[in-house]
Image (tube, rainbow over all chains, first blue to last red; front, side, top):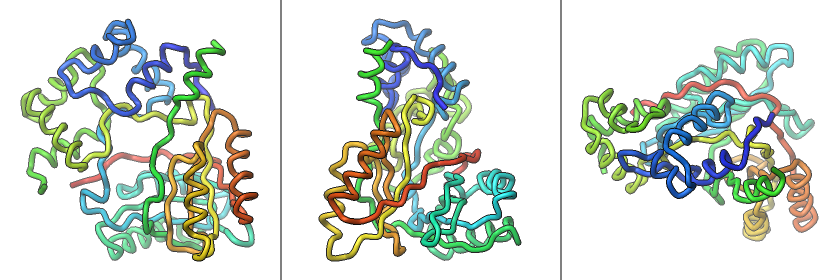
Length: 170
Length: 149
């Protein structure tokens, strides 16, 4: 799904996607180079938050630095008719940071529910897996946990090109 | 650097809901019982020492007219470095993780169109001779935010 974004929205996204300036009036600091008022940046961010373009505004903790060493992608084979109701419940568990339904790729991959869990160690992560398993109950026919062993690339999704293209289209 | 009580309050309270107003740090700081200047100084330090990855709006790429797809490959150890270089060299690839599984490489590719993402996967498949399993998001479930420290 795509919300309608105009050139100015895209400029604001480009100006803030690596972070807000740490100054008393951060929205003014974003607005001025764009020739906008702080009020306009605030209003546009508020609208983007309403439409879901902005998920939230705040800090993003570094799980590793905070002692969360066991970061696992838990994957579950959940009965199709129950996966959406159960997925919503899994997403609300305090230790789950992302939760998605994705297609199975049989025979190699029978799992359709993905939930990222973060534990201080693998014992803690295993407790979380058990908690999810309890919640899923008999609707779950199989599971696995794939621990991260290293980050090979992490640039984040950037809209640099999108913003440029968008300007030509608008 | 070990976290003190103020750091913990900041981390627990500021994972979302940063105010949209003229002096947002002043408002957020008041809720934490500290001064605006102290909050800004703390955030600078927590970002500098990488306790925090970033601070600001978190955008949903799916809602910006782009698309992104999770993918996985089973890469033989002998080819590992070549395939890492190949995958990481694709500008569409935003994240790439090694994971403990037969499917040992998991990455996300994003672009303006689904065709561009698919083209990146096809380049990786043809250059590596390996299959790329595609796991597009079918549904995203609401996640509460609450890493407690």
